[in-house]
Image 1 (cartoon, rainbow, N blue to C red):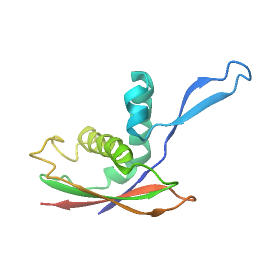
Image 2 (cartoon, rainbow, N blue to C red):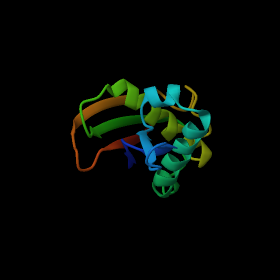
Image 3 (cartoon, helix red, strand yellow):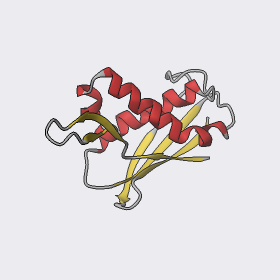
Length: 132
C-alpha cells in the first residue's frame, strides 16, 4: 500500500506588524520543529494527520511494519531535515488512528528514505508500507 503525504506544509505563525498579513512557514523540516513554539508544532501535526487520515483509515492494522519514504520535493533540500519530521508525524498518525500499536522499534522495523526528484508542481512523499 502506498500513502501520499505532503512534503510541504505551510503553517500560519504570525502576522506582519506593518501590513497585518498572515505569515506562513513550512512546518515539515527539523529547523521549524526545533525552533517553533509547541502550539505551532501541534497545529502542524494535526493538519498533517487530517490530510492523510482518509488514506490511513483505509489501511489494515499492521503488527510489524517497514516503511519506505520516497520524496518528490519542491527545491534542493537537506533530506534528513524533512524526513525526520515527516516520519514522526506519519508514525504518530498511524498510532493515533489505531493502525499500529506503537511506533517503537518493536512495531516499526527500520525504514528507508530516498530522494526521487524535484517536483515543483506537486511536492510530496510517497510512503510504501510493507508488513514484516
